[in-house]
Image (tube, rainbow, N blue to C red; front, side, top):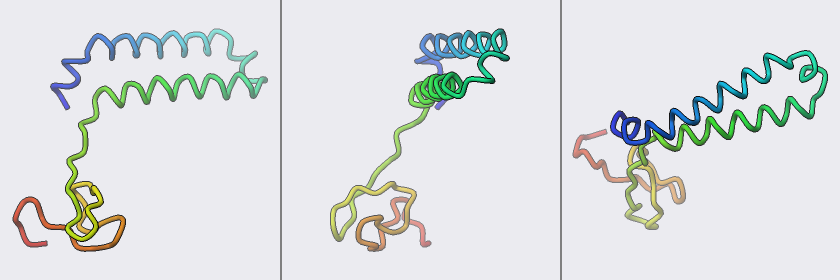
Length: 96
């Protein structure tokens, strides 16, 4: 994850600056925003969108393995297939 943060630092900085501007706007107009549920919803959505963009830039992609029974792609951290329930092989070779 550290490498993704370094690689995407400019985009992450831009997102952080946009979050700060949004929050400063909320603070400066708090009384007006507080009495208007539409603004509250719009501000919440805008902040969550920025937060999601930031998260997408730093999260590592989950490693996947194919289920030996149905070939469904499962996250490597699962013990059982989420589609058919079959036991998945342990990719680390350890008994579970």
